[in-house]
Amino acid sequence: MSWEEKSAWIQGVLGTLVPVVYFVNILGQARNTAVAKIAYQQPLLITIGVMIGLFVAGYIVAYIATYIATYVRAEAASPGAGDKLDADKLHIDKTDERDKKINQFGEYVGLTVLSVCMLVPFGLAMMDRETFWIANTMFAAGVVSGLVSAVVKIVTYRRGR
Amino acid sequence: MGKPTKVTNAIRALRFAHGEMTQAELADRVDVTRQTIIAIEQGRYSPSLEMAFRIARAFNVPLDDVFQYPDSPEP
Image 1 (cartoon, rainbow over the protein chains, first blue to last red):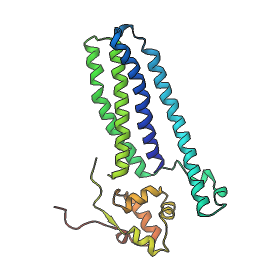
Image 2 (cartoon, rainbow over the protein chains, first blue to last red):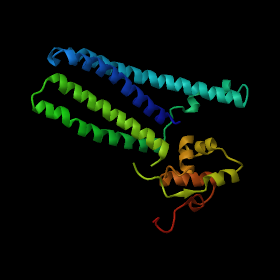
Image 3 (tube, chains in turn cyan, yellow):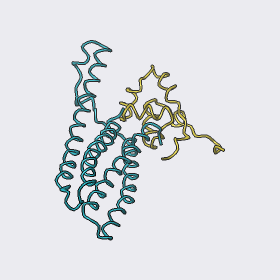
């Protein structure tokens, strides 16, 4: 699995799980409380911060795991070969033209989905609905577009294009 | 999503004809990832003209010996 494909998996999994926790919490409150009284701002900002932090942590863990796997394979093939590995020369995060094309295609589809999904908060704003719904539908649009983008990249890596 | 490519190739045969060159070795020579070589071999990716030339050069053969395209369109 190439580095960019791993990145797509990290983006897809973490970009879905973290917002789901937020939405379950916030929408749970919305069942019993008037949305105008729900303090969603801080949890929303924390969720976005946690997502960014986990993305970075995910990339670091993926890098280390890939290096360890390469080391184990090298040792299995030839004892002692693992110790001679140079992390800089392994190019674990190497990308090429195929990665760039798949990434561009995934981002293009994700951006198209974002454009369509953003019509919802746009409509809510025009109808003077609560900022709770406007802010959260905007966030949901970003989450959905990120997920679609990641899925498109993974499927394209697997099936070709 | 687009269709997988109609371009076929002889990379696998050429690798074996060149001292059983591994996919990793070819990837290093062409300066791409091994996953891209695998995708090209399996017909899941059609490389750019520049990459195609680099692959042909890695085997020291003309481009036509590596990549083929069907004469008539598929039904």
